[in-house]
Length: 139
Image 1 (cartoon, rainbow, N blue to C red):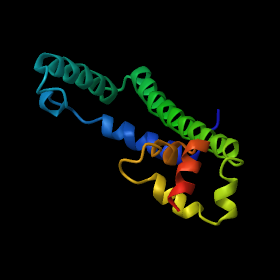
Image 2: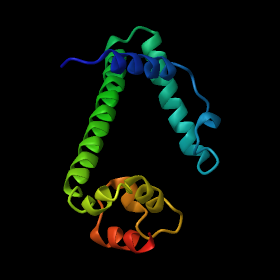
Image 3: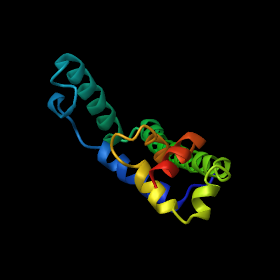
């Protein structure tokens, strides 16, 4: 598998941040569960110690882990963009009356108004005819 330079750069940054020793107070869940936070810190510090002592297997595992996390993040972003584009294409005919009136910007502002029952459509780009008709009555 080939990785992008950005993925490698981010994975390296995350890996080197991982190589810092932690205390239980560093864990965000310390306030709720100090025993679990202590266990996590001990496990983390054990892993860091193994890597710093030259355990290549553990080092490879964590480097691969952070690289795979970057790949998953990029794949998720791509899938999200594809879904938004698919929603836009599916809603193209619904938006036709607003586009013909050159009010698409006003429609977007109207949708993104707090309290608007159709506001979710502004973010997922999956427009409904009900939202379009309601907007047209407000003009």
